[in-house]
Amino acid sequence: MLCPNCQFSAASNSNFCPACGTKMIQSISFSCHQCNTVIPSSSNFCPHCGAKV
Ligand SMILES: [Zn+2]
Ligand SMILES: [Zn+2]
Image (cartoon, rainbow, N blue to C red):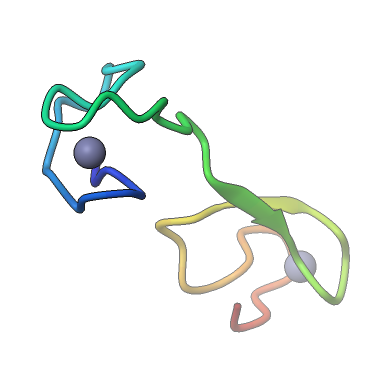
């Protein structure tokens, strides 16, 4: 996963960025604008309704 502060590519289970110490947000997720399903940030389409996110 990428550090939101310095874009360092840290291990996916990191809680803090090893490069700058920023707290990593483990699951940057958001809600589908159509069905409000919580979608992982890596998704391009809603897994529930198929809407493009
Ligand atoms: Zn960082
Ligand atoms: Zn949806």
